[in-house]
Amino acid sequence: MSAPATAPLETYLAHLARGELAFQRAPDGSAVFFPRLVAPHSGATDLQWQVSAGLGTVYSVTTLHPKGEPAYNVSLIEVDEGFRLMSRVEGIDAAAVKIGMRVRVRITQDADGKPLPVFDALEPEQTS
Amino acid sequence: MTAMTRGHAAVIGVAESDLGIVGPHMTPVDLMAQATMRALDDCGLALSDVDAVFAASAQVRFGPMMLCEYLGLNPRYVDGTQIGGSSFMSHLAHAVAAIELGLCDVALIAYGSTQRSVSRSAASPTDINPYEAPFRPLMPASAYALAAARHMYQFGTTREQLADVAVAARQWALLNPKAWEKEPLSREQVLASRMLSDPLTVRDCCLVLDGGGAMIVTSAARARDARKLPIHVLGTGEAIGHGSISGMADLTTTAASVSGPRAYAAAGVGPADIDVALLYDAFTITPILFLEDLGFCAKGEGGAFVQDGGIAPGGRLAVNTNGGGLSYCHPGMYGLLAMIECIRQLRGECGARQIGKHDIALAHGNGGVLSSQCTAIFGAPATL
Image 1: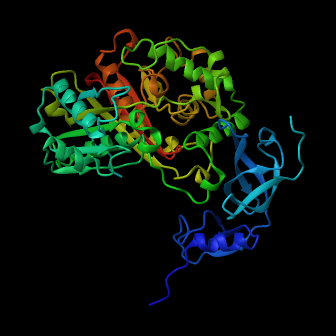
Image 2 (image 1 turned 90 degrees about the vertical axis):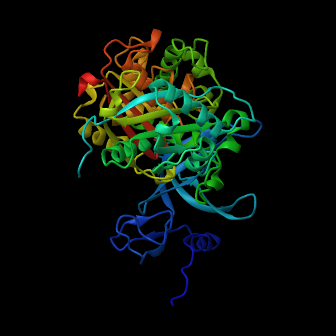
Image 3 (image 1 turned 180 degrees about the horizontal axis):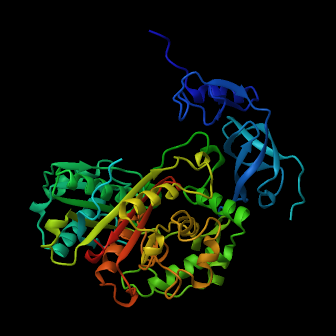
């Protein structure tokens, strides 16, 4: 019997802990995210892990306004290598995050100290 | 691919359970059972006639099992498909196939929810996506907000146009005695209401209420003996686009663009033939997306279509004539209630909100975060 597979999430989190945003490539060259044991469509099981250069574009954004706490944005980022993930853009006013904005990843930590990929605007706009 | 024979199955009984606030001691299965007896009364059948059970609820993991126990049913065909708000269009598609194949004669489709009375968080435990959850989206609203924001960016859709969807729903609701909302709503009121997840305000979001329903489906031959006009199932289509919103390929095109053509092909009709459309309105952006994806207008033109009363009473298309999930009732998985309105419109029993020509109706269900899309097309007997 072969060794049991490593959970894709475990590998992903290990990359994040090293400051890397990782994704997978299927044998046909397509980028795969979220990480999986099996590639969508082809069913390939020999997915290769790669580390993103961390550059991307805001594909969509919503600003949340919870009662009694500051507004924050939730964004979908189209990463240049060809995959999309949910994240947020930090360092500028939440409402100033716009679709089409160029961004770069930065691995930070969430409230529990777990590594988290967030993005910074490459050309910060004036907060309005 | 073999399509089912057009119109060979018909809906003969429909009913809602009690709607609104039913109290914390009522269970979702109580509401399923209550609606079931009302639907059976609607068509003149008895519990003993039911030999197939289709059921789903966000609060009941094993819907058909619990409903069968409750009602003492021992069906020979069972389906508990759970794909969110479109589950019941999916149940209908499967019931039609099972009836044609002779696997059952009389199918019961049932739904119940007490999400208002027990709280939404208690009623709808959601799967945790470890790649999304750390960013604290408010689900499902933020997913629909992301789609709305992208639609606005790509096509110039405006918040005013989104608001007009809520205003139209309210105008229809004021014509429906069973609707939750009883007061008029203006575009300005929607725009001035509390922002939840930009660009969606609380008035861009559906109601959170208790409710349920039931539907009885049988063969066209057996339907002739029913108490009321049988309404035939002309075609159905199902499609799954994705699971989580970060996995949706194009945020402005849903899998309704797949389920719709499947249903039209089976029914032998197109969007121009539809007299009334029930388009799942969990949020104001959804009818706009479905008008486009189901071919009522071109991609990107949904905002202009709904603007200034386009889907309100007297508008260019009768949409969500019951007042929809926005103003009539939304118990969390609204699809069955949308289909019930189609049946009533085609029977001509809708009173003040009854549309004029009522031969063909379309109900479109949406589940998850624009994830599952199912379309059902119904026709009065004259359309066969």
